[in-house]
Length: 251
Image (cartoon, rainbow, N blue to C red; front, side, top):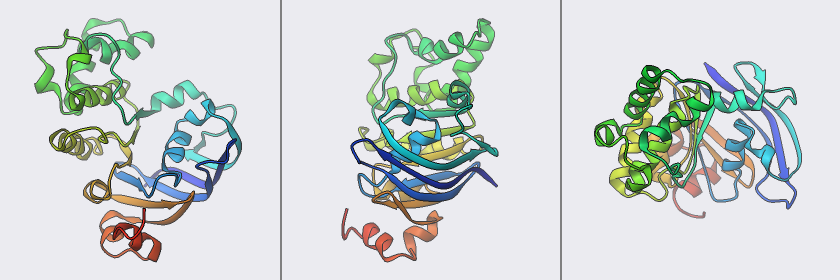
């Protein structure tokens, strides 16, 4: 079942860069959907459309619809704050808040009005377990998050998003600066998380795309070239451009 339906989405920034051209696709719930392709293809732009972060950029023109659970989130009447609770995002560089590990997780919940210590403690443990880092930090929750390694910081940032119990998690090259062991832990966490969430990932490499994708979409110069099950697109792509990119002939 599709959690997200993108219909004829086009977008151009004021400086003319990284636009989308008439993109239409359905994104399945409880699966990892990977958006891959060369830089400037529109992958990150599409991610930012899904939680309206593009509202904060200079957009020259946009058209089309994005339906999440049947609601067009591009409608001007959309409650963007509520949308961003439902659609969480993890960025390429981990940005822990300058506070303890525990407070990193409870910060947004506290802002949302949750004051009960039992509920906050429950959210901390639950989200850190989901992000596959609980065992590493459970005895250090009052330590500053900035003291953790880069891979641990990134998983804390993932846990911070999960604490708000979103339905969709967007990840924009979340392992680009991590070592192979930390990368493996994040990838393993995604395979567990898809049981509860809809995951959309911009990977940092073709290899990561192939390892993680239930479904994969190849973007080139703002166009969706091919969209299929991960196993199929990385073994028997139907479009020559997709094959050429996967085989390293360009990009």
